[in-house]
View 1 (cartoon, protein in one colour):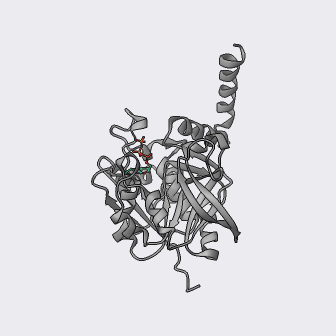
View 2: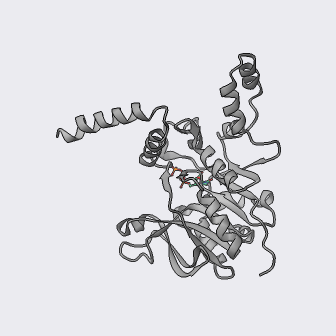
View 3: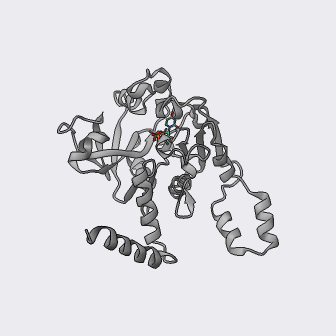
Length: 298
Ligand code: UTP
């Protein structure tokens, strides 16, 4: 195998309309809704940083400027906090502050689909492999899903798709992979099906929103015709790429919350709150009270 190019860059597509959260997302991007005390987008960026990513590329759209502000230095706030000697708040801000030049932003001018959003990052990624993280999927795990994928990539090269087990009867709601031979800490992906008809899924491993892709995907996305929902679909371009390049699967074993859905978003908030020693007791006692009074007395 020729020398592997390191995965240094990550792409975060954040140009979706977030219609499932209207009216909340009329003026606030869904990626800025908070799970406990951090916006959803921050979880994906933290996960990428932990995996060794050095450059963070955001594909934004209209009404998403606040995401850029979130990752910028808030000079006036910083100054006020310093004058008031708010050490803890200053420390919190600096912990999440990207260094100058680590972030890039480009705009998807119209929401033509995830595949189109990824294609919009082509000039910023250039000719190297990159991680792709769908920020809606908040992944709770000490090591981080992207770290596990980069470990696998460093052994196999090629393209990596993160997957996760789901109940067989739910497979029709997801993109599902076909599992081949075991390779290093993962396995070869021998097929992918978007939302298979009930009872026909080739496995119960669904594609969970984290990828490592080779730059050849961009040429394929450029030529990709609109697919399901009349959108440019990433999966369609990956299926074409799989004819000439290897894809490997990584099984993520932590907890994933789909924060693009209301139920997933609420579950994420509860899970992170129950892990926070400062508020766990309060939240737990209310949860117990609500469950007992609303459901068990029925
Ligand atoms: P979703 O399928 O969740 O769509 O996108 P959405 O528009 O964000 O949300 P709903 O369904 O209307 O509530 C999956 C990911 O792809 C990005 C989204 O920002 C999200 O990270 N995306 C989707 C784009 O960046 N551009 C698009 O044109 C579509």
